[in-house]
Image (cartoon, rainbow, N blue to C red; front, side):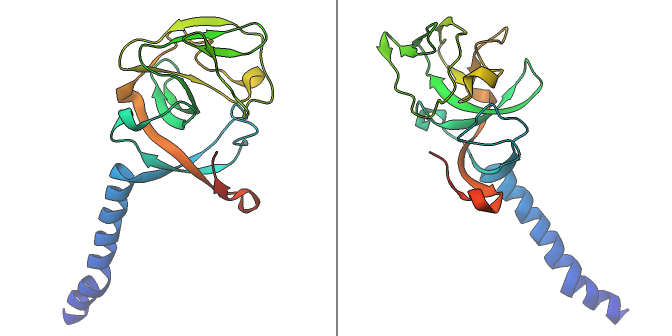
Length: 171
């Protein structure tokens, strides 16, 4: 009987505490994402594993942030770049250039532009997202409902942790 009590005290309790702490950290602080497609290439490559911090205040997000959100339309989480903020007019021209409220957006992270055009008036409390690999990204330009509500935003991507030759901060 003493052996069982000692095992519980020495092993079971620390393991339970570790599991509970891990679940709390994942729920409230950060989580990891494995990227299944090349829609964010070259910034993020297919197969990269990304460290993502939970977003508790969407007002802290800025245009250009790489964000993980849940798409109700597609029924899965996605990782894309935040382009349109609430109440902005976003125009995507035939040459692939993006204009926010009439001003051209500089996008050095986009290597492959697409000729898919679009005009979007982002509603209050919603956001517009595009992939960096515009020719190979199924993003807001193609969705039936192109906007993501603030309550669908899960986290902000910060750091590539795998593969090891790509470890580093996201830009």
